[in-house]
Image (cartoon, rainbow, N blue to C red; front, side, top):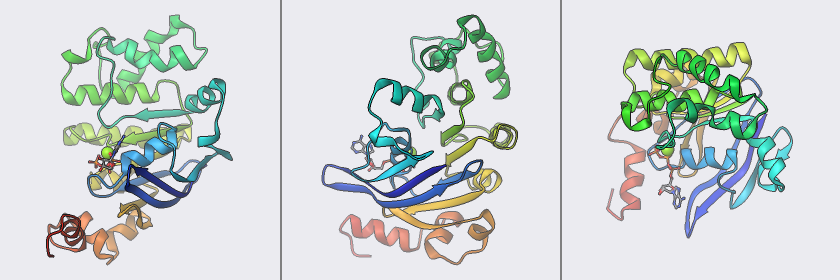
Length: 258
Ligand SMILES: Nc1ncnc2c1ncn2[C@@H]1O[C@H](COP(=O)(O)OP(=O)(O)OP(=O)(O)O)[C@@H](O)[C@H]1O
Ligand SMILES: [Mg+2]
């Protein structure tokens, strides 16, 4: 179980997260939605331990992530997680197979002789074949995204953090990825957080959805709740309207009269 308790994250004087309280139960997929720049990726980085919360804590399976001390403790923690970076973050100088097996090499005891086979199997799961020896520069944007996804699942983690898994993919491939997220949850009991702007994906894969706004959880509930709620922040975001409370806040922020 992942529990965020009053997570505040400041960068200099600017508080991006102002008190996030969330529980992600084992086996569930929590979807996070919210405007660009509201701190969704920052939150995922607090969960994996790439950022330490300025205040509050993230507790995973009873342990406070910011209090992991030794290299062994950090490695043991990271081993339990798969992380799909928003920008893919593939290593340019490594081949696709080497990128996918990177975590296997450094975080697991899986023998190197098995790495290529695992890479090919993970590529097949994301709808790719015969690209093992390509370098990232030889891939399209959507292919890079899928290779990054293959890397996130390669070590069979218990937790997967997906930062915009379907962005940049065509609608059919997006649905293949949605099905993969659901399969991992149902068959392997993976606990997941999915950050997305793609509401079709959010409704399909989410056990629950949380909407971030102004550094806090503005609303959370089931996909059905998000389809029907009258919360004006949720309605504006989900229905994609330029007018509403979120626009007014942006204008306030910019010092322009609403
Ligand atoms: N390492 C950092 N140093 C300083 N500011 C940062 C850092 N990382 C993120 N920020 C700032 O925090 C804010 C939130 O960024 P974040 O990437 O979490 O947004 P997001 O909700 O994921 O947006 P998007 O939907 O566009 O991906 C932004 O204003 C960003 O400039
Ligand atoms: Mg982001």
